[in-house]
Image (cartoon, rainbow, N blue to C red; front, top):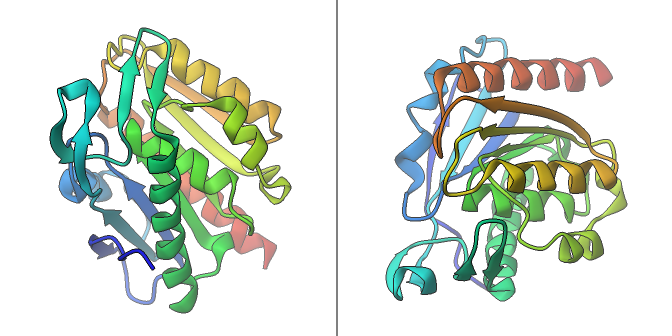
Length: 229
């Protein structure tokens, strides 16, 4: 049994009914997106638990084997492709599954759990969500990509058809070029997910307009789920 990831947890109100598990990018940590929460402008009627896991520290090949927080090793990278360690991706996916399971045990059903991620964290969010055996609430994929669309297609669980997915990307992203984000968008649409695409005049980062739109999208999805009950 692999050890559960260390996390930072923040609740927007007492007795949260929804959870967002938000994964940072390569070389960052769980603190990276904590300042975003107030900027989402979520109403207090939406009690949400935000979980920010810390990636394990591993050697990263493209950075000369330097040890840093990473969800998986990147072996090679070009303008439109990443050669990655698939075993590392699967290990991280299993660790995210542990966090989902822990939320289930705390009374949050999978249908009330969102996965979010930036860059490398977004790649894990895609893989973990779309292969999960119980439908989740949605995915927020920021400045990210799908490392191997064929692997995702094989692992895709049909219960995730109709899954709402918000994709946001910078038009001038020099780390994960815009086309990689668009390719991921196409792949996810082909699997039957309900995709909302947003692009911004920025580089490999987040901007306030994007954060506000994430907040709007989250509130809309929470309303939708509440209305189902």
